[in-house]
Image 1 (cartoon, one colour):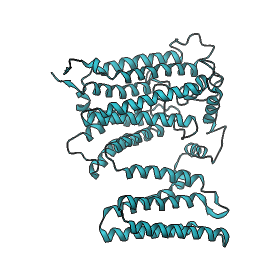
Image 2 (tube, one colour; image 1 turned 45 degrees about the horizontal axis):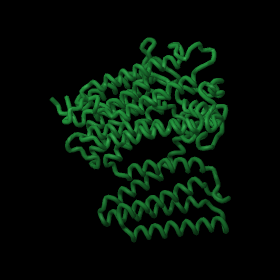
Image 3 (tube, helix red, strand yellow; image 1 turned 30 degrees about the vertical axis):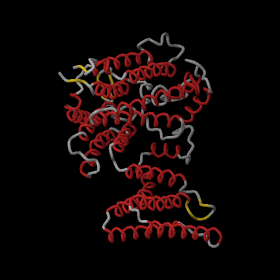
Image 4 (spheres, one colour; image 1 turned 60 degrees about the vertical axis):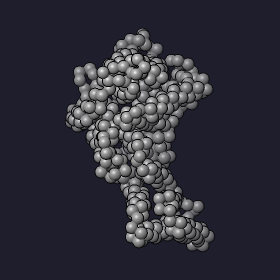
Length: 487
């Protein structure tokens, strides 16, 4: 197979992305050395050490990438569903795995080798959803097609949750960024962001009084946001200026009067007034929908109803449904608990390690927090704290810039694909890497919950390194064949 200009597969590869990949592998290995090396160790290249074993994983990953580049890229499209269902079977079988590691049944133990199928299910899911969405006649704005795409994404999530590996399951929510790029209504993405805001504000300030009044600040501001978001959606999707003015004046004026009355006259719970206003908003949307027969009013009504239902059920889910360790982690993240000796210990020690690195860091193998093993999981989930301690702010910024270059390059390569299958798969790859980067670095800095996912190409381990390599190199192989003349 050759291109019209006579170039072959190798010349068609995106060498910028491969260069970034190799650079990340190199910096990742140095970080594993810094996180795992002890001065009692004889040699950092000794295969019995974690740094030495990581070289094995890196070498096998590079070989795996080379093998993928030698494959026919048409096979990924042809066998996408077969690969996907085979991986689903493997995920299902892993649930009944007798080996439990740190309370999770997500690992398959094959003698000395341990594999985590959830890491490989990412590329299988990306292939399957790309295959579905690239079929003739698929329209993401059609309900049946949208829910079918969601089913492909959600099914492995449910199986992984069955393995008690919630963090790995959440990674699959990154695919919704790809759905947004491919035409998913922005209202769905906005709804997800709104739900996060409701949860954080509502739970964080639920027990806080509003200006000394017997009103929960969390409930007050969440209901206020529900009113504001609903009015904005009416303006954007319905273009009904009269209804927008009506809802804005009624909800704004009544809320302000109730707040002033409660503050300066008779203190009372303003939330009851806001709930009455919410019922008024519901009624106005229902009336306009029935009168005009415009579906948008009913969808906005569903959003408002869902917002209130989600908010009032979130506290129950947090306190009654979530596992105790999950609840503590969220409370620590939101500042409701400190628990520096328990759930907050990892993050606290990671922050100390990063802070101690200063501007230029302490130098390779000179980190005190890592050498004294203060940070648990410092060569896996919390490996970024090793970068911060040994390489300082400059080194950490350099690593983030390198990841940013990878993300931007993946977007560029995805956009130049001549077929939907390649473009969709490319955005799946980009979304997964972006999610891992944001969550992993965020949890080390105390900005996101600790859910235990690796930093791509940095965290120690074979499953994650192989999984990310397969995910990336399948895309590179698809891209390399974009202009080939099939002979």
